[in-house]
Image (tube, rainbow, N blue to C red; front, side):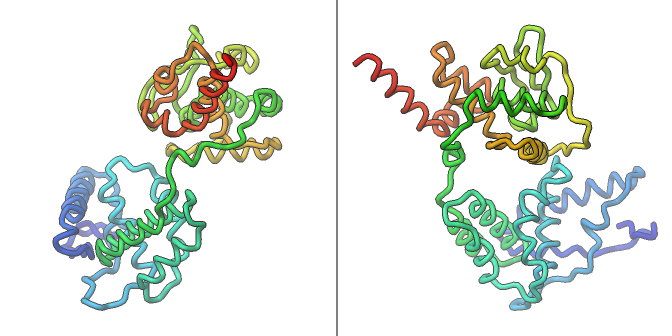
Amino acid sequence: MPGRNGTWRQQRISTRLLWPDGIDAARAMAEQLGRDLRLARMGDPFPHDRWLVADRPLAHGEAISGSEALRHAERHWHSRSRRASPTGWAHNYGRFLQPLETIPALEPRHLRALVERHRSGSRMRHHAAGAAAFLAQAAGFGAELAADLRALGSGYSASDAAPRDLPADAVIETVIDGLSPGWQWVAGVCATYGARPSEAILHAAVQPSGLLAITAGKTGARQSLPLPRAWIERWELHRLRRPGVKLESSNSGPGERLSRALRRAGAPFRGYDLRHAWAVRAILHPQISPSLAAKSMGHSLAIHSRTYQRWFDQSSMLSVLKGL
């Protein structure tokens, strides 16, 4: 392996993965190391921080510090995430595991406490449990503890994420009218087409037909319907303009940036609420079927129905009520 000074030498890499549960992860790490070495031989920089760390096999019963466990978990994540975004580890795992950094001898109780600090059944607890379980396996604590940690994070589902109190169209219009041109375009696209913030910021453009063309993103390319169509002209969405700030290429970073822009404008809702509001608007629109709405939003009909079930029920009851 290439050292930091440019000389090549043999280097032992310890995975801290247990046999036999860790064999697939270890194989993935070896494949990633092979790719990094091939690129280094062709002149690319070698990712020393991923591989050249002070390391040795963990003896049975030996303690591991929190910071060391985090290093192993991050390296394991990079080894299995071939197309990972630069911010993926930090957002999905690092921010939940950071409190472990100062623990001199990490124990299972520390991982359980990391999960239990969040409210039972909450989204944050669900993600913290996943991060803790990932670290438990990467640091050699075993699959049984990882399963227990995931169980601690149970009770949350995507359907729970649908807001109970969505902004009315008049509120959405007032807030977006007052945004700067770049953020107005992004928020207008999310509101008008139900696009994810990351799609609006990085991959979207309004076509002459009025459809939104999304070229990439979480669920790939698609076209989306405007609802209501009048918002295209209201915010001049045909004229592409994005905020003049450096934006991350991950799915989560742009959404957080949009929510911050909305908070600065005094909005009583988050960026993703614009997507939820579009979905409910489509449910109440007689010409848009659930299947068409799901395609427009870029997810399956099953996910669409499960996530917005409460609104489907409300729409059905209102229709029945009109006929009574």
